[in-house]
Amino acid sequence: MSKHTPGPWKAELSPGRGVLSVVSETTWICGEIQNGTIPAEEAWANARLIAAATDLLDVLSECEAYFDNRADADCDQDGYIPNEEMKLLTLVRDALRKAGAA
Image 1 (cartoon, rainbow, N blue to C red):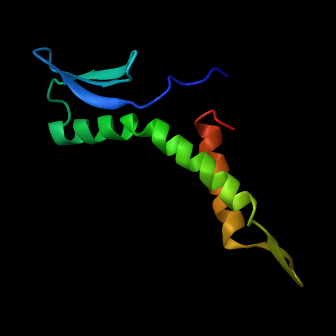
Image 2 (cartoon, rainbow, N blue to C red):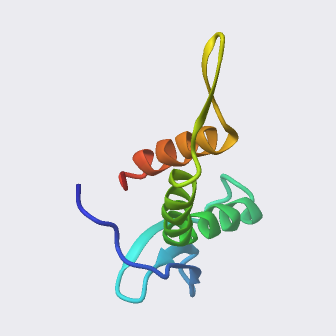
Image 3 (cartoon, helix red, strand yellow):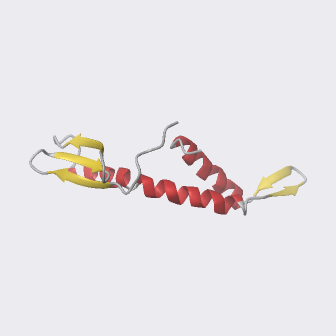
């Protein structure tokens, strides 16, 4: 799988065009034509979330390393019980896989 465009990304409104875009320093990532199908506030919230994707991916990668060193399981008569860190590590790895980063 290829790598994503490096961050930082930012959300911006193209002057005079009504296109809400997410861009990096070097390229256009994605955009939405503002035609009133969703409220402007929601469109901006979506754009900000997409623009934060590279930062979120970096943080999740750091979380994976942190939880990987702390994940463990306890054992009782019914078998293994994952600790809270193991549960969080599973969620982090699932999200990284979904993003194509694992």
